[in-house]
Amino acid sequence: MSALKIRDEGPVRVLTLSRPPGNTLDLAILADLRAAAREAGRVASVRALVLESDVPRYFSSGLDLAELAALPAARRREPFESLIAAYRALLSLPKPAVASMSGSGLLGGWILAMACDWRLLAENGKVSLAEIRAALTPTTALVSRLRELSSDPRAVKEMILRGKALGANEALAAALVDEVLPESEVREAGLALARRLAKSPPRAYAAVKRALGRAAADDARWARALEEFSESFEAEEGREGLEALRAKRRPRWEGP
Image 1 (cartoon, one colour):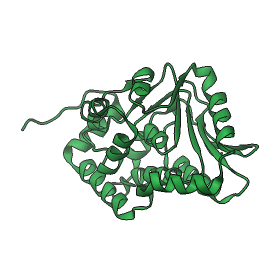
Image 2: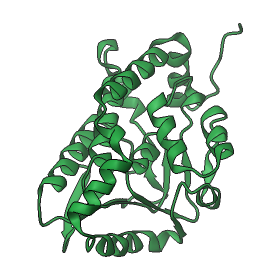
Image 3: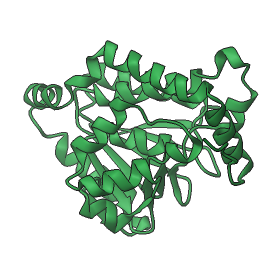
């Protein structure tokens, strides 16, 4: 049974992440998400999309580190490749996309939210792009997207250089989310917003969105991103960082 639930609410296609306890992103759910986003783009009756969670406290806590650790070395980059493929499918969707974050969006979870046009966050939620804590790079492409979204360079610096998770009000102040709401109201508010956006003129919305997100189609840009990630992932620091994150312990960095 897929951990991605799909339903239609009139002209709105709703994709629900449903993989307790933290909505970790394994290869299966990422493949399903990519396929669902592409299908939503093709179906004329679908005029807007919502990405939400039905797991308490989490929109998504990021990649499934247990699955990643179990993969043979030759396949270790596949989860990040699948994450980027799902991100690009959402980013290039020629229709309104809303991330209803009724819980925290961390690491890969926040990357998926960044692909959407609008982001609603629960008042007790957090967002982070803290790959540096695992000695990994969030890649130039994703850092550029974060900078495009934010009105606060300091907040971006805190997130990517210190690995700080921003609380809901901090994320709102930095323009990384559009609205902060009680957790119990986020999903309904996201659906209501998507219903309003579904009334937008579809060709004009698609054209403007392409102009804003033209980097989604830049294959060379994303090939470089995968290489950047692979280089950090395959280094000794990256291996130690991921193992420490998976084991929930402090990493042991070698000195210079």
